[in-house]
Structure formats: structure tokens, C-alpha cells
Length: 526
Image 1 (cartoon, rainbow, N blue to C red):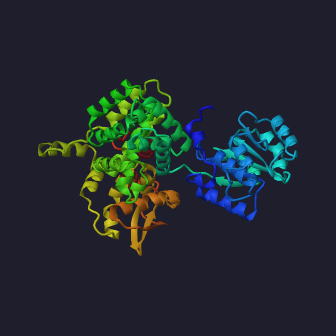
Image 2: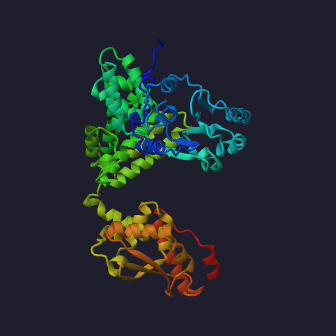
Image 3: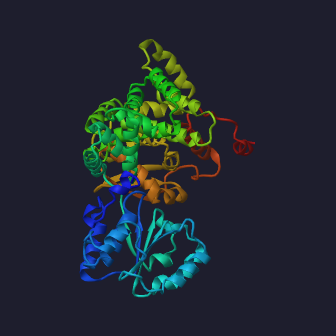
């Protein structure tokens, strides 16, 4: 007898054996009990989640000698022939190879033929998204009004590629990725039934690497058992899968949190020497930083982090060494590195540069002896110094009109640090004039600036900045005022003063900028 791989040997024969898809199986069983069978179904979802298996169980339930029933008996001749792939009335079509209009025409010619031995002729069309546009159009009429003895079941991993005209003629069922715990439980049962020596840590590693696919988990289990000399361990799993030991991403997280550049470079060297995929490494590095951010910001994050409890504790421990801003900045650095890795021929260099950026030391606090030289430097850039001093000295306190006015420069500075420069520039032309019943009223000189800040995106930036500083949710109202400003007068000293004020404000947004000659002002003075 030919050897059957584990995923084929343990393929579910009943709806009750299908893991993690209860909304799908329960709906189909209820329809079978009520006799409300559709002529066309679309099963959509990731690979290895049971789409084709469910289609076969549905075919068996429809044609079982003791049915139609909510569960096939599994023992009659029809059920056995479907399980063994010998049923003449169950036709599985690979749409990746039979995707053209001629293949669909051939299918249409075969559809009217009555079943040979079953009540229903069931067509399972796998990877249906590969069918061409003209072929889909030729299939429309047949799909909409097939003979009463025909049921179509189409399976796809990319439902967005299927025309709406096809979707509207089917009952759609969405399959989800299997939970890691369900995969681990099934792998443990299979290992026990097959008397395979696999450590519990190896089962956990297999379930995590399966990424929601039961088929992938069983295939990898078979490989690991063949590789291991004695009892399969987690190290055997990572060796066979060619992926990183999860301890390594934890080490990357620790080194990032502690700004340990030497440690990061040594870890990168080790990954290169072991022949690891650096793009995969960057993905895991970023993924663990994401876990750290979730655990730091959300009380329910433990349920959203797909790691063992011991690993979650380590991630949480290292994450506490960084502020939220530092974690977000690190995620941005690694996002840029990942984009560059796609095209770079020097992937190691890309990640080494990213490591240097992540570990860049913060400037130390200035000793007392350096205060006077810094004051002299501030005198050369008064606008920048004014903004920095205001930001350093400002204490939010209780939210009020007075505290808003005093902290306006600090609010703009916060926006600049969050890369919301456009909003900060627009708000330079505004000032708080009223705070009442949770509404902050701003006055603008220019209608253009008022209208731009009235847009939802800019308002949201300001509301978030106020909430971060004062901890209160407010609404923003923009008004056009009659204050002085750049358009108060076109000529004379007032206009010049307005221009100088704009220059000073601009310099607070763009540190390091300098004033050059203004040709328009020169013409006026001449």
C-alpha cells in the first residue's frame, strides 16, 4: 500500500473534524438539514485552512447513501469512493491549468450529463481566481442556472480577483487562519496516534511556524520527525524550517532597548554566518518591536501576541526599557530598512546602518560650565532659542485659555517632532482666543489658513497634541479675525514688522535656517 503523507491521512471526513471553521460548517449543516442547498458556493481564505476538504465533505453529505444529511456516514460506498478519489461524480478542476475559454466551454458541455452513481454531480474548481475574464463571462449563464443535479464549489485564496458578476451568483464562505492553539492540539494528537517522539516545545514551534495552516503544520511535522535522530526538539524544527530560533529576535529586541550596538552587530554577523534570510530577520525584528509596543500600550495585548507566555514576559520586560516614542521611531527605521532590502545587493550593510541608527546615543545633559557658551549661541538664533526655551519651561497644568496661549509654542514644537510640519506651519498663523465647554476657538488672519485647519486631518493633529499634553479631549473651532499680520498693510513699517514675525516663526519650524536678502523688500525700500 502506498504511503500517505500525514496531511492526507488525517484529512477530515466529517464537518465535526474540521478545525477552526465553525461558522462555515454550522451554516452548511443547517442548510443540509433544511434541504436548502445552493447551486454554487465560493470558499475563500488562506491556504491550508480547509477549503477543498470542506468541499469534499459537502459532496459526501449531499450524496451519502443515508443522506442527504448534516454529516456523511463515512462507511457507505459513496463516502468511501469520495474519500478514495474514485467517485465519478466528484470532479476536481485545477483552474490554474484549465483557465481559458475553451476549457470552460468543455465544462459547459459536460454539465448537463446526469450523474453516474450519485444524486448530485459536484464540481470543485480550485484556485478559481486564475480563470481569465472571457472564460468567466462564458461561465456566467451556466453558473447562474445549472441543471438541478449540479453543485459548483469554487475555492480561492484571492477572492478580490473574482468578478462581481460571479460573486453575486454564489454563496460566499470565508475561511480564517486556524488559531495556533488549535494547530498545536491537532499536531499533538497526530504525533501521539503515530507514536512520534516530539517534545512539547517542538509542537509549539511547529504550530507557530504553520501560520494558521493545518496542512503546513502537518507537512513540517513529517519533515522534522524524519530529520531528528531521536526525539524532535524545537531546535530541530528551526533547523528544518530554515528560520530563526525565537530567542534571536528576543536578543535583537534586548540589544535595541539597551542601545547595545556591539550586541546588534554580533547578532547580525551570526545570522549571516548561519546563512539566514536577512529580510526575514528584519521582519521578525520589527514584529517583536510591535509586540513590545502592544504590550506597553494595551492591557489586552497578551491575547494579540502569538508567543509563548515566557517569551511574552521577556518582550514586555525589554519593552519597558523604551518609551513609546522610541519604539515607534525604531519601527520607522526598520520599515525604511525593509523597503531598501528589497532592492539592495548589500543587505547586511542596510541592517548594520539601521542598527547604528537605532543605537544612536542621545545628547548628554550640558554641564554647568557650558551654559554660558550656549547662551551666546542662542543669541545668534533668537527665534529658535525662544521656541526651545518656551518648550523647556512650559508646564501644562490645568487646561485653560491662558495655559493654551502660554503653551502654543510647545504645541507646535510637539507637532514638529511628530513630523506634522504642515499642520504646525498652518497653525503659526493662529492663536487661541477662547476656551469654553470643551471647545478651543482659534483666530486666523488668512481665510486660506483657516479653511485648511478646518480640514479633519489637521484638526485631528491639533486635538491629539492637546490631549497628549493636557489629557483632555477638545473640539476645535476656526474663526477669521481682524488681528494685525502680514496682510494688515501692504506698505510701511507695519508690513515689515509682519514679515519679520513670519520669518521668526518659520525659523522655529526649520531649525538651522538663516535669513537671506529679500528682493521684494529691497524693491520697496528703494
